[in-house]
Image (cartoon, rainbow, N blue to C red; front, side, top):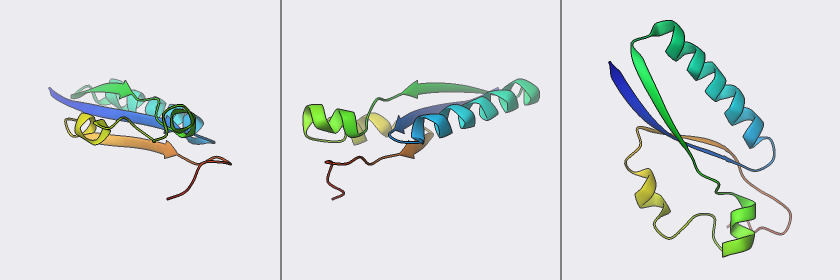
Length: 84
């Protein structure tokens, strides 16, 4: 059976809702197909993380994500958080 590691980053705004619905759809496919397994790890990186740490993710954030087969990203942005 194939296994896939997915990093889920809901982030801000509608992102958490979109990620939750998308993961629900993927879990349904996983159950119905039965020939693959998903392992999802959630990361709480978004505007609130930025406000607390001055960055959107830890310094080693990109390195942490490299081991995943896919990154499932919601949305990011909030008043008072720069876009650059």
